[in-house]
Image (cartoon, rainbow, N blue to C red; front, side, top):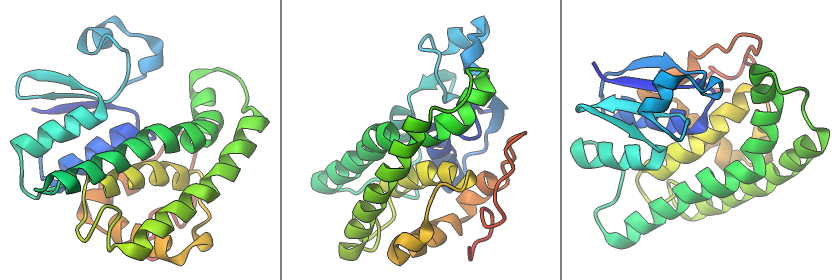
Length: 221
């Protein structure tokens, strides 16, 4: 059986979960406390990070590499365009959310509010939280700008770029750190993507000590 070693509120794990579910690939979810540096887990991924996917006799790491492997081995439904320019735009946006958005926002809000407590690393740093709360506004504006020109983030069809963005935003929505009233176009896009069957397992997540807000699993907000 395929296995995904993950943390429920990891945007990188969630991106992989969305791709697996969209492509209807069955997988067992194994929660991994990667910060404890378990020797068995380090043998699966010496980098000591999640996600790690056990599939086809391989232990695969790094979310983008995993997602592109799944796209190549299970091409239907397609999450990357067929043309080089389209694939570049999808990959550019995946990098935007997994690198820049993660640095500016996710690491400042989710990691300070949740990860520190889970890992026993003390209290949130208010300066980081304030910076993340400011930066997310600019990112929502950018997402809105993209959606003013396109039906989906990278073009006229849903792609891996939408899953990358939704993975980060869903984690932040779980802790009520997204102001959906800032941009109705972004809110409508997120409502559309979280209504997909692939999103169901994410909306069912429950992290002990961190109950989600009432609107989190509400498809109509």
